[in-house]
Amino acid sequence: MEDPVLNLEDCGNIGMPGLKCGAFYVRKRGSGHVVGKKPCQDYCVAREIAPELFFAAVADGHGGEAYTRSDVGARLACEETARLAEEICAEMKKRGADESELVAAFLSRAMKVKLVERWRQAVLKDDEARPGEGCGRRQIIRKYGTTVLFAAVTRNFYVLGQLGDGAVLLFDGRGHAQLMKRHSVKVGSKTNSLASERGAYALFTDVYERSLFDHVLLSTDGIYDKLDREDSFLRYARALAAQVREREVPEYPFTVEGIDVSARTGDDCTVVLVHPQPAKAQEAFSHPMPAEVSVREALKRMGYEELIFKRVCGGTILLSAVKDGRIYEIHIGGGKTSPGTGKGDVDVAGCTLLASVEGCVLPDGRQVSSYLVPEGVKSFYELYENGEMLEKRYLARLQDAETDSSYSNEFWLKVFENLRSLEQYLGARNAGCTKDFARTLQLKDDGTLYCFDDGIRWEEGDADRRGFAELREMPAFLGKLRCGKLQCPLYECMDQGQTIKYLHLGGESAPMLRVTRNPEKQIYGLWNISDRPWKVKYPKERVIVPGEVLRLKGSQTFYVACGEEDVLTEADPSGGFVRYETELF
Image (cartoon, rainbow, N blue to C red; front, side):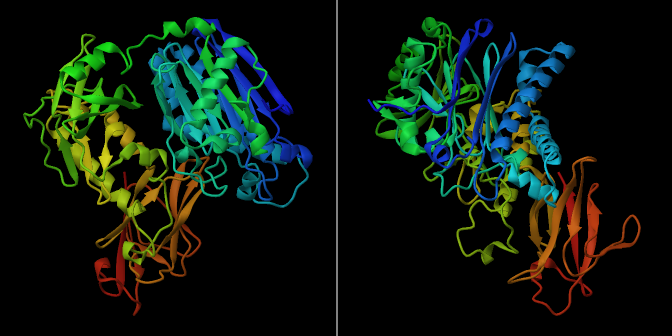
């Protein structure tokens, strides 16, 4: 075994008897920072907030010339996230809220926005105590750039969050494991950040029943990036869990199969492992996962073989299996279905309902449904985890793209308008959806959505909208901007959104506007960054000159003069003007 060079900044193990779990944490300064006499960019906190709530967070400051205070940013990220957790817990207690309301508070968009805003206020306050450098607000915030990952553990749930790189892994001793947030292979060092305009919207959160997984590992990229292939990271996680079972504070916390990963990477390394306590208490986690005999026997009787665990999606467990040489997706725990009846077909453009081929009900009451999924589809939720729905740079029109325009802003606008139509269609029929509806959706590159029938509730009056509420929040759409037949989405932002070019001009269109937000008043507006005025006729005539902001309150209409430029016919020019309209969602 390699002799590890520790350089440990923090190390310990916290027991939480009331929650029947513990948390081992360790933070190490990388050899590169030791040699360069630079501070550790990682930080972590792990604390029992109340008998019914444990909280842990890890953060990784970006480092580099542009992020000169990112080590402080990482510390403030962990501290502010933990303080916010304390406040949420105290508020829930004051209201007499139950565990489900506590979980919902951690998952809310309001929590995400508040977290980012509090961190920003903390770094601005830290900057005030330092010698002035004449920087603006955005430049100051950028210096403190950092990622953040967290885990809130209640009696029955893990509430997990991730912004930026690193990993959150759920696993158990029965062969089941999954990353909370699937993501594309990291290219270079760029990552989402608390300092970015889309920080609150790139912060991905999810919830899992503790009975499904008995371990959660939070890791900064110092460890994860070195092991981001095949099952290397999982092997490390299991090795660490084995060490924790043997001794409360492991002697070699970054070692797997005799190799000290922290020595190989040279980067700062931080992990927090939530584990059962006492160690032998793993037997208490006996929720029937797919490996249990009853599930396997039921599927075997139906003719399925090669059963493979894929993922837990909320309360639905996804498996793959083979029958008669064809691959099926198996859902366990979804809603009731009517296999082979065609019940519930939907007549909505861009949406196709996948009916279960067959199904059964397990002795414990869980529904089992089998589906043939079309080729070439991708997981809608996985694209969300990858940040594909977040705001991208605008093009005047998709055909101007030099590369593949899949997953553009306009693409997602089309997809979500189809989903709005589906929600209205179901609502008109007193139907609804399950809370896991969004998590099992599949999507083709042409924008066609495939919905599973176990996610739809057709019973009269069962108009649950939780699945659609989650879908509406995913892309952080504020609304859309329309010019004739051309349109693009307007995204929420923390201060300023990206530049939107004039829709009515072809070729290299000139910059038109930015979406802006007043954080104190929480008011959105369109900032005219063009070289021409906008004419507003209602409720009273006025002109928005370059540099001014048009406040967004409901739908707005304004006119822009167009001369002999290359005006697109889709913009419907008339009388020397083009008409722009906003619609808020």
